[in-house]
Length: 284
Image (tube, rainbow, N blue to C red):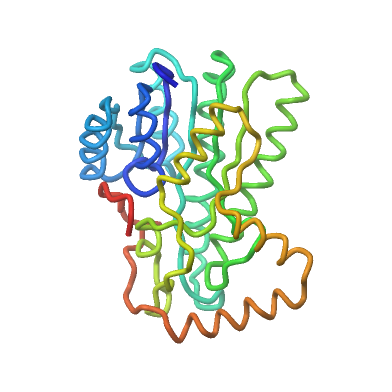
């Protein structure tokens, strides 16, 4: 990992920030792309404390031209690119029928569209270095999260896109390694950054993994050039249970939804689909 040139989108909070710190501690040259200026300052400070200050660039990943320019800037400053980590996600929280079309579409644009556009921008540079692309997905790609329909749909799309990309690159004889890292619920600011469509916020789901654990899985995926990793054995079992025990598993999730709605916190959420939110905190 030492001296590898690494780009991370969404690196100013949660999983992205934990990953930037972890890789900087191993001597990697890290570039972080995100929207929040306060978070970018925090990322520089925290990676420097870990061992190496990062290059912090203010970029909105939903702006394709700005994202492409940000990637080119980072590559020029780093002198090339060995690893790219597409990590941006955002969500609304509320029933589908209460979710405005513009909120739904924005979640898809932020969560799925940014992964596609990041891949498009970094792939030529990774081809040149025989590098690695890591996309952070979610267990939601296979186990639905009620009240988060746009996010669940986006993570399904992310998984399908990554699987097709990996096959296409393999068929072309590419030396780029493609990895999909899928965690279960993680203790990050993500849960308070949702748009609440009806005044409720997501309840705390247990067990919540530490973002550092997901960062370690990302690191292993890069080291081993592994195609896929799921973080948390219990969530591997949950995936299997949902797949093979339907319709019972669907009824169980519906019951859990009713319990969650009775216990949910109240608040508007920070609406990260529209507003910069990563301010340098790994946990919520």
